[in-house]
Length: 83
Image (cartoon, rainbow, N blue to C red; front, side, top):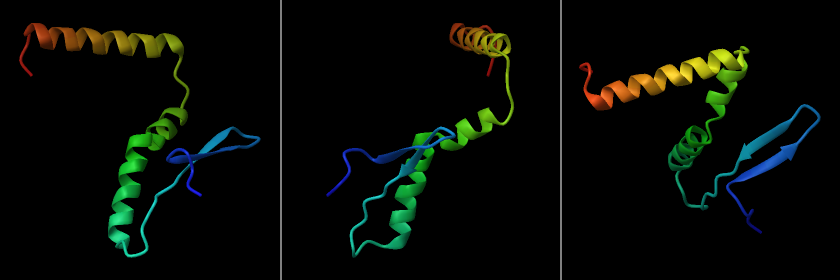
């Protein structure tokens, strides 16, 4: 029986943990399976979440950086300065 989604979700005392599931055929090469795993791992953004949680950023600082990024993108689209 196959799972309904690509991930299995585990609820533990410390929080929620996701486990990536890779469907591989019996005759499939291990390199292809690893490639699929790496792609799914990158799409799930687990590493990005881990890096975010290493240090606490205040909500005001987070908001300020989002605003500065938006201003920068707006200036790029308007052509106010070169890339």
